[in-house]
Picture 1 (tube, rainbow, N blue to C red):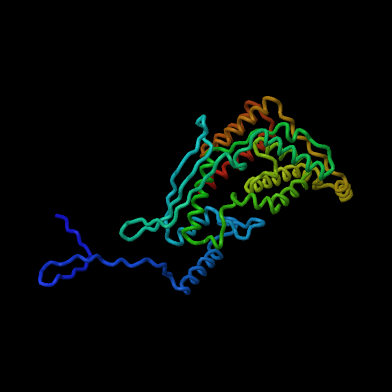
Picture 2 (spheres, rainbow, N blue to C red; picture 1 turned 90 degrees about the horizontal axis):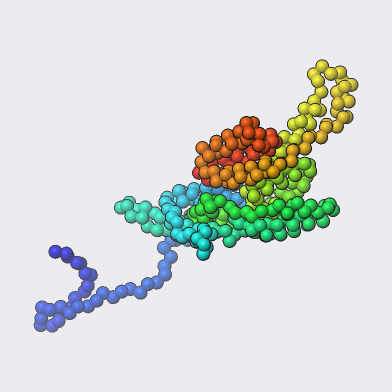
Length: 376
C-alpha cells in the first residue's frame, strides 16, 4: 500500500467530527537576492585573482586587437570549470546536410553540471556551438578565391608600384576545411560558451579567438603586422612561402585566421633561415687564411642561392594528392606514414625534388602539431 502525505490544514465543523478541507495558501513568488553584496564582491574578486594567477595568456586566453575584453580559449574554459567544481558533457545535437546529402554544418551541445553528494547531476548551463561551410573560414569557392586573390594582388601591386602578377589568382582553387576541423570548432564553441555562462565570467572574457577574427581584421592589427613581416622577406623566400600556401589550399594572406598567420610566419622564418645557411657557409673564411684574405671575403657578396626547381606536371600532381592525404591525417601513425611517403618520393621514386621534400616535411610536422594540440 502506498502512503501519500499531504500537507493540509483542517477546520472541524461545529457539533461534528468531520473536518472541512482547507487548501494550503501558496505564497506568491517574489524575486530575492540570495547572496549578500559582500559575498558577490568576494566571488568576483576571486575570479579575477584566478585569471591573473592561474590562467596563462597565450594558452588559456588571448587578447584580440580592437576587442574590449580578452577571448577565452578551450584550455581556459576547462580550468574555470574545474576550479568551480563543475563537470561537463558534450554531445552532437544535429548535422545539417544539403539536398544531395552532403554535410554542410554541425552543432554540438555542451552541458555543464554540478554533481551532488547523492549522485544527482544538477544542470548549471547549456550552450550549443555551430560550425559550417557557410563560414568563410572553412569554405571558399574557386570563384570567390580567385576574386579575392585578384583584388589582393592588384591592391599590393598598386601599393608597392610593381606589375600585377596574374598567376596570383589564376591558380587559386576551392578551399574546404576537413570535416573533423568543423567538429572540433563546434565542440570548442559550445564548451567555451557554456563555461562563460556557468561561471559568470562573461564580464571578464568574450568568446573564442575564431569568433573574433572579423574584429581583429577590422582593427588591422595582426593582418597588418603579418603583412609587413612578409613583405620584408627576400623575394625568393616570398615565392616559396606562396607555393607552400597554395599546396595547403589556403586563401590569400589577408583572409588568414590567427592560427594560419602563426603557422605562416613560422614557415617564413624556417625558409629564411635555410636561405641564409648557404650564404653563411660561403662567407665563412678558412681557418688558416691570412687577415687580408678575411677582409676580402667580407667585402665579397655571397653568391645568390640557386632557385628552387620548378615543379613539373608529375611533381605538382603528386604534391596536390599528398596534401589532401595529409589533411586527412588524424593520428601519430598517420603522420609517420606521411613522412615515409615524402622520403620515398624524394629518394626511391624521385617524383619530387629535394627542396620540395623539405617543404613537405615541414608541412607534415605542422600537421602533427595540430593533431597533438587537438588531442590535448
